[in-house]
Length: 269
Image (cartoon, rainbow, N blue to C red):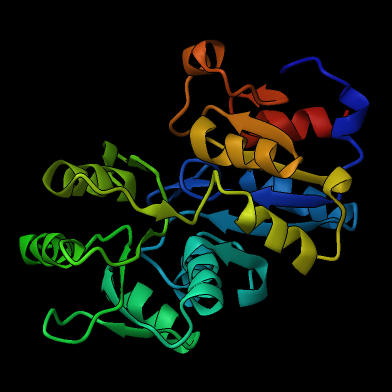
């Protein structure tokens, strides 16, 4: 652990928890997760699950956590899909959005009042890229064709990979790179490290930045977003980031632990 003002670690009441690589990988719960959540309840704290993964809806995540033994309600989540929905309604109200994403993402956006389509023939006004685990080559072609029109171009998250049981799979950032190679255009990324998600979550919980901690496994998204939002950061090495990555990176977390299990041990001292 980075020995930096340990007392500050014990003053936290709001815990913004990344999911993939932080509390689970695929369908395997990371050891110590349930104990950490129990501890947060014991101190009358609050957990909010923050994820850049836009392939699933909030209800999908409620079911996912339930299958892992975690009781959560829709109000316990803030996802890049939700942040994207807010952003589109604020900046492109009533515009028709072509979505390169999963059926769950499209349903989430539509239920939030965003007009969506997957048909290139429709009068598309905005292009949105998501972490599409249902990706087809036809979708990639559609995006390339639409971007020739110089339309607003948004992406839910910049993550290059998603942790899996076998290693990693390409995430939205990798799709954006692939499209850049064909179009020379980059999207505006909504998810972490953009501080918007964390700021929304802190406001939603009626908390302060000083009593909030963000816990995640990626330096360039989880930790960077915490830094950008002025929130204390914990990097766990159970997902993407390694200790070597931490040592070499310009993005320095306030604390580093092998996993949430070791974080809990420190919190309970």
